[in-house]
Image (cartoon, rainbow, N blue to C red; front, top):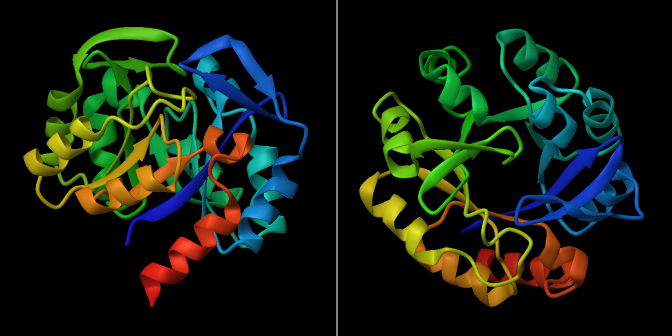
Length: 244
């Protein structure tokens, strides 16, 4: 069964909603990260994808205190992302309560280092963040373009033991225009056994069901839940139906 993972993006201690990578059109959600995580937990969700937007932009994690608060006040397993560049960043994230790490920019700038993390920390703990637009990877909180081909980028680490890849089609993010089904299907077919965490464009539970049918490992949802096109009760019902 596909895993449903809610996402929160943190900036200056607040939850920020961004559309298509455009920070100027962002919106601050009027709920604390801890309260929202507790709400997710109350509906049976177990993993939370937390993006440190300040960290992604500065090139070093900033919002460890939010990570610590969420991990300390809920039972959710936090997948922490944003600005991770060093072993020290990873160690500190784990110290503050992260269960998993997703890293993106470092995998472009220092490929060998990221590849070493897959081995040293274990392929169950490290996820490659490979977000892009028009087939090219973008990094630093999607603010910096690269010439790196998305699929070739995934292949490099797949050949070195990568198990988990989180991929966002940035043009779909926050748009409620539907996921990039073809992209996820291509990744799954090209890299047998890889676990894809699909992100961006999810509108309704029908999209989640289609991703499930494609063999996607997990779907990361943000705006659809904030806008109410996917309700937490629907997610709980879906999980119950699949598990019976």
